Length: 307
Image (cartoon, rainbow, N blue to C red; front, side, top):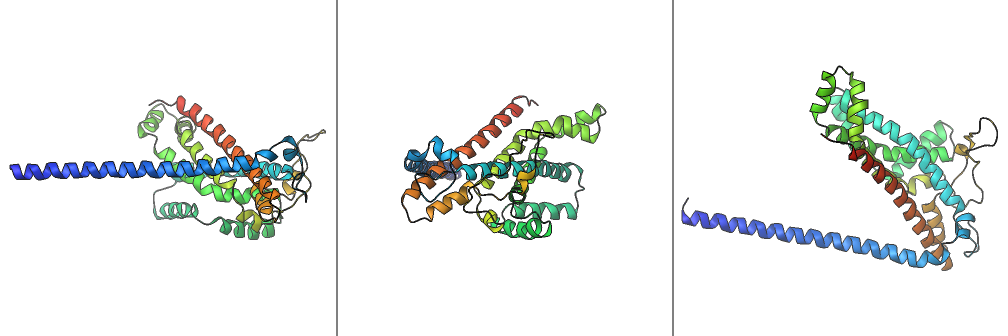
């Protein structure tokens, strides 16, 4: 290599290193600005709502007087709807991901299903609300209930859970599968005892992302008839007599935290803005608690994974 070519090569390498450094600086600045903006919004929200965060705020129904209004029906409704979403979306999403990745034949049909599942993850949430209104509320006669809301958000979460389940299973080395087969296990035994536990960390990540999106959704729940004002609670899931468990609460009307916040923000009285800010702090706290539990479980699963 001539001296001139060597000099050009060194200049090219130096230019690429400079571009890499510039890109890294831009990326760090972007992340810094985004995190700083988010922290500023959360701090402002906490400052505005701190005066309303007391026991009376959590145990009171919404009302006309802002100093007496609370979020009792909203946070209980959110908790019950998310419970239905969790129970409906996780088993179905994980089972679908296992089938598509481990059992389905690799042909045009499975490729078409994969493309459609991936595209469903980006569909606007209002479309799921319209689908649920026609299917769950009208055709299946479930009405404007907690069950309808939970199933609607489960449809919203389902594509994310399926995609992350497939990707997590795909990341497991084939040597794990081959070693299990060499010991005489069946396909399901190999999945249940090896690939599924090893991929549980990635699956929980998908569940975290899906539930974090679902808990803040408003449009699909308004579409299926969520109430903006509710002054009663659904029937308790636990009864004092046999069989001690009741499912009547699934048929009850509901409201959720984002809808309650929207209702307060739309009021002309400035005092309701502080109520909305306090409700926003509670909603963020509920999201962080759910994410924290999922992150802890993911850590516990990944801690025992060695290959």
